[in-house]
Length: 162
Image 1 (cartoon, rainbow, N blue to C red):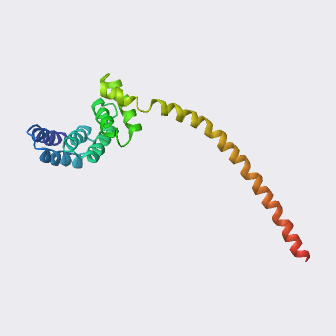
Image 2 (image 1 turned 135 degrees about the vertical axis):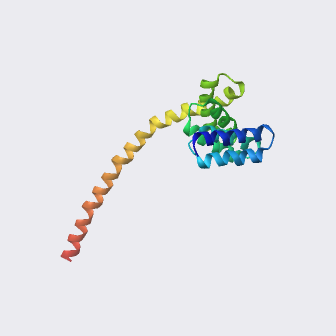
Image 3 (image 1 turned 30 degrees about the vertical axis):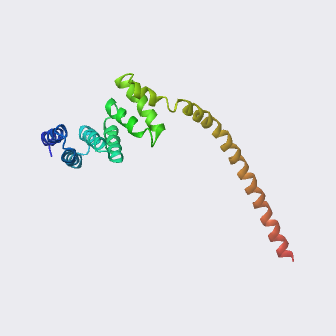
């Protein structure tokens, strides 16, 4: 399908959506993403229609695809923030912060963006502490191996003499 063909399918999908026929709109958007999977607009439209149909998981998948193709699209990030709030609040918060930078201070997005401010600071502290714990573990392992290697030949010598 060429770009003109994609435009025709997207126009038909939008017409169905505007007329309230979300099932046919979803079918047309699906047709577009199957034939032209790198079209962020088709994925975004599919996400909107699936969200309006109450198909949250399908909507999230579609918006994630749109976001991976066009990460600077504020409306995609905003929709992901709202849809992910209950199932993945950390990702929702990240998407909301991204959307606020692009679309501005929308009350709902600002609220969602603040869900994980404190947790990220705690995670950074935990990440800074992690290498210290790993270093201690790495230093301890060779010492134990050396002891085991030294003990094995001694036992063999005793067995040979007996």
